[in-house]
Amino acid sequence: MKKFLKIFGILFILLLAGIVAWTFTNLQDRHPGYTADLKITGSVTAPLSAGFAAVTITPEVPDRWIDANNDHKYKPKDGDTFTDGNGNGKFDPVWIAGFSNSKPANGIHDDTWARTMIIDDGNARLAIVILDAIGFMNDDVVDVRKMIPEETGVTYTIIAATHTHEAADLLGLWGKNPLKSGVDKKYLAFVKEQIVKSVVEASKNIRPARLEISQDLTSAIPMVKDTRKPEVFDSEMRMIKAIDRENGQTLGSMVAWGNHPETLWSQNLLISSDFPHFLREGVEKGVFNEDSLVKAGIGGVCIFANGAVGGLMTTHPSLAVKHPFTGIELSEPTYEKTEAQGMQLSLIALNAMDTRAEVIDLASISLVVRTLPMKIDNTMFKLAAVLGVMKRGTVGWMKMRSELAVVKIGPISFTSIPGEIYPELVNGPIDAPEGSDFGIAPHEVPPIREIMPGKYKFVLGLANDEIGYIIPKSQWDVKAPFTYGREKSPYGEENSLGPETAGVIHKNLQEMLGELGE
Ligand SMILES: [Zn+2]
Image (cartoon, rainbow, N blue to C red; front, side, top):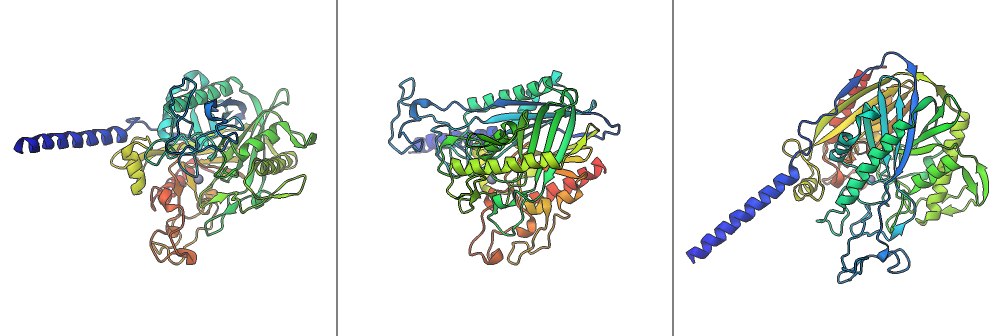
């Protein structure tokens, strides 16, 4: 008996040691000592140049189960057996991220992309890469930066995600079950290589450029629903169009607007970029009513950048989108609805580019970047980090490395936000409703857009990281009594690092925007 206890004791210690080692490995800092901190205050205006590129990141969807049920809607069940191309019966699908676990891609509707815009003033070279993905974590961003060749001459790279809910998992939360990562390591490595390719190509495509900047602050509002009070949106649309100064050709464009790309909703099992696909097609190639061209496209590479999508900006199935030509109101989450939305958005963008553009060909780039540790208060996030479901290292105990950036290029400014920020924090006003957990007045004031310089203020969401929802502290609501007469806690807090996150981000941005200057 004593011997048994001894063996049992040794096994227990070994098991414990294994768990500690496993935890340690998962939490280990993947980029010790790394910081992206940067401060460039461009003082001399100079001729601008720009370059664009679009490189696909479409995953390979195994065709062996594309037609498993002939309707692209096959979902695996326990006890299913599969025959893959090698006949080994292994079920190893591409997991679609967003909504719920266990959504295997059954095919591809449209390519997903790493699209890059580079702007250069002869002193600093800024690359903005937008990925059709649910998100891209800071550790992975840093991996990519370390891979970008020096010849590209890039001073700073922002890698943001569109947050499409219809593409392959790159964060890990949407695997077969909540304990299994949905990220395919080979696919993640492929995405990183394609991002590098996109930046390299864009740098080769750099031409002397004139930027035409425009905005439409109202037309796209009806296409977003706010599913959590207070009702505050980020549905103003802003555009940059880059024209070759020597031959007048369009190099590319950026269209920015804040909404979840999830119009296709939860039952779609085809890989897609959601509405950004149709928006980009419309801007580049034109908007067609059946076969006839209604509005000409501008050519070049169009990039869609998302904004403040927290709290929660969505084209919910209960919100109808009007088809621009048939006038039919489309509610059901279908490709037809998503295409109608994309057409509406491209018409708004193209019309604003035509009629309200401000032209600049001289400017200087100013840039302030801060790497900062973000505290993880959320127990589920801690667990996901410990278990390695979400593969990201920590810097210090339960802190993750993240990043903020602010940029000014003449009348344009960019703020790069590492997650899904509530529009209240960006555009105001923040509410302090009765029943909130802290009972405080609005804490993160003034609104970020108010303190950004220039006339055209682009707020890039899910940029250089996805840390989840960034929620005003005075609206934090986990404990009863609840705000706005709710009977239970609203959706949001469970996918946030914690109630202090917004304050840390706001304080740092305020300082950084101060350093950026007017
Ligand atoms: Zn989201």
